[in-house]
Image 1 (cartoon, rainbow, N blue to C red):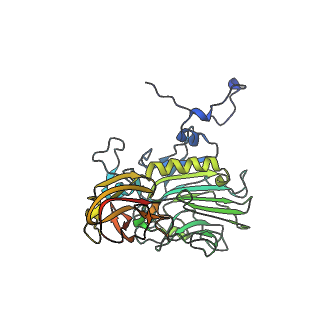
Image 2: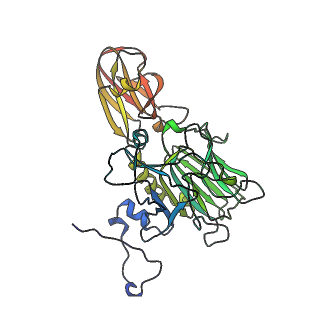
Length: 388
């Protein structure tokens, strides 16, 4: 078996003029993304983290992010030793939160562990006219009020700074020039808060100076909002991961990241590529354990939830299952990240074909918040539960 290495040249090869290009239909999603000319940087926590830089996965690219301070982020693994990453550090809780995938953890302090790259973001003066998209799969630190990504400018009306703020209450706000452009807690759209214990989130932030609009998507459309008539613009091409803002004062202390992507252009206007990238990341990280079964207990601990008879890894909350109960409650536990929205855990809940209202609680399982649905009463016999 041999490996094929694809390299996209930055110029037209005269020897190949007239030849057909690579057919995207024969490439997998990772290759298609890695070959896209709009891709500036694509970092995955498992790959290419060296002592002094994080190298892009983009094919034919040597673009790197380098330490902005005295240290690199810590690469986390759940394997000891790890055959894939000889620099990785064992951390079972973070490993579990990322579905047994690698993550980068950012240390405490304004300069510890953050990464940066110049000439990464489009500005209103370049060929892309200030249109860019940033994709972040991760979370801020526990109880943090931080700027996961942005640049080195103070976000005031007198400057040209841009940053994404993630508050300790789970709200996200994107600012440019000190002006709030978009937020997930605005009254114009449903609120959608997410904190550290909810696990990592997929954040897509697209900004267009040309089209005067901005779009924020969370978890492949679980939350999706676009605003228009945006008059602010970005003039700083530097991107920073792990902190941003005035004097680099917003570090995601103890926060982590599995994936970070920077593209030129307003990606959300390309639904095919947007869906491809979102599916690629969600499928890679989001197959979380969920459990179901019966118990006489009126509430479950983490150990009791994991001891339920049924279990699987899945990317959605939807589930139909049948159990045998003997004057017991029927339970179903799944990651809160798969809830229908921040305000509703499910669309419908049925017991033996009849609508019912379950008792809803939460429990932390493998360091991630899970929603627990319990039948309203104890039951006996063969019970089929359907959740959508």
